[in-house]
Length: 271
Image (cartoon, rainbow, N blue to C red; front, side, top):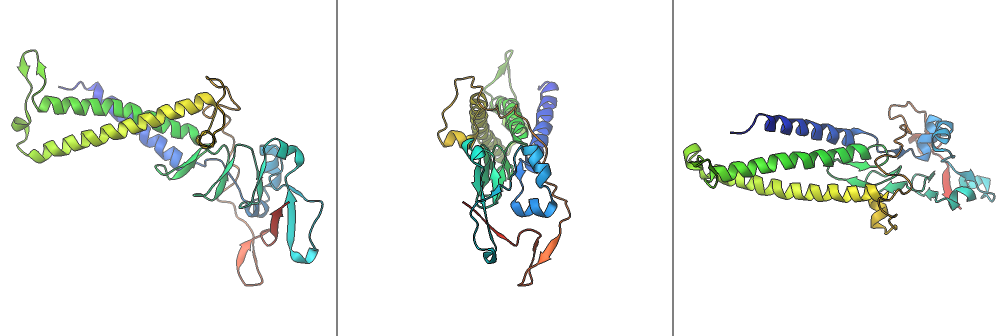
């Protein structure tokens, strides 16, 4: 017989896993709004207060002719020396540890990676939820997989309990299909559990070294372990959301009759 605490603990970690998965999937990873969104919503000053710099950059000293409708922007020399870079897609200045995600097509603060399992970027604002998801999956697998294996071994008659032979599958269910399904589930679950545990151990290493996944893949040198680097990813400041997805913005009509966000009519380039 199985102790009642086992299914209760499994249920707890299952609910925790689903909750962390939904939080990582639905929360904002730390998206820095594009130039058009900043201008249309008038969020320039608020972002400057939150980020500590102007994400729109500063106008370059040398501009093109006024009739070209092209504005040349540049990253201030002080910021460039500290690792701030210009995003040619979003047309903004992004912080050192931020990166542009090709899947989401947005710049993300302290970008870690784009996770297909949560269908979202993993960044500054949802990394804690992602780590909670992997941790709860590991705990769930450590409970469910051994219990399932024990059931299989007991059902196949390999377990003896105080001189009493366990009930075999033939006495429980005559269908050989049930055996195949349970064995397949056990093997698949075991392989998935090992992969998730490996992913969890890898992120423990990243947290201790103060690196993100992208920084590690790019060969950034690991600080001396336990690696109190720039900012431990799991304990770093989460920060507020930098944009309002429900903001009402003003649209303007172009010469071709298309509606675009206000402030997006000019072409912006970096120098």
